[in-house]
Image 1 (cartoon, rainbow, N blue to C red):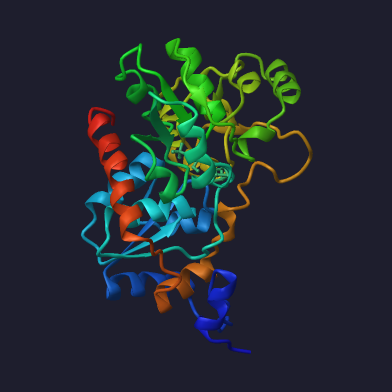
Image 2: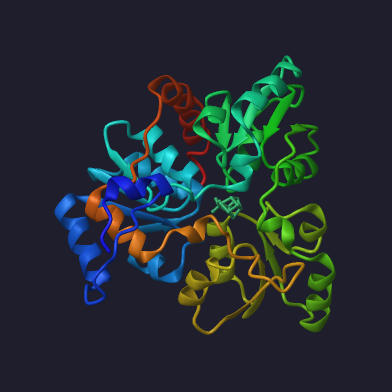
Length: 330
Ligand code: 13P
Ligand code: SF4
């Protein structure tokens, strides 16, 4: 039975029956052209969506693309904070997210009202927030960073300047150790990167002696201790391309393996094992987006990201500061 898009939006996406004979790939391509829409996708999307994207990248790359696009519509195959960032940068464009419930455990861990209280308890600190947070939390920040530029940005802040780093305690802790800083950390984690098992990783390393471990800095310290390379998704991808090795253990959401395998068909990749035998290395938020939801979202131009203009303007300043401070990073 067909239901109206308006009704379906109460569940965060359009739940309309699609005739199985419709060629979704061809329709998505046609709608993109017809509506002058660009499809931006993160590596943690299902491979089928990645293959349809006009641009695929890490959070910094996606923010940069969103800032420079001339499209009228941005369809974000990613999570809510990413689409929100695109909207903050493009108030006059329509920004669509196939499923509005595609959130992020880090963003959820840092509600803006609680963050305000935390900030008040730390006077004299500047606030550097990881891009994985809501627009309202960004609006309370001085500088935004991503996993690919966090070190670069923190290293530009004078050593005697106290810093609050939110919301990822793992990324913040990693930067603290790397740069010898003592940033005050908000206690948030990514549910995906937090579940890798150190014990299983050690066993895997013993079995595949000499195989490099590539890890995302959202992993906690015991995992990062065993890593040969730590970087954002795009940095992990590039590392594997240029490395002389032909086998890698990869500690991040397993969607990245699709591009890594396409880049290097003759190399092999072993996903780092999570604690239990679950699908925990797939982000349950990212995976809410499906090809069907993507098609319906483009067709109806819903669900759309909207936000309070006052918050948008306040959130724009720290994002622009990040883009400015990380100009020299590829
Ligand atoms: P990057 O792609 O920027 O490394 O971020 C990973 C992530 O968890 C996005 O939510
Ligand atoms: Fe958030 Fe983790 Fe999912 Fe990235 S992988 S969107 S940090 S929950």
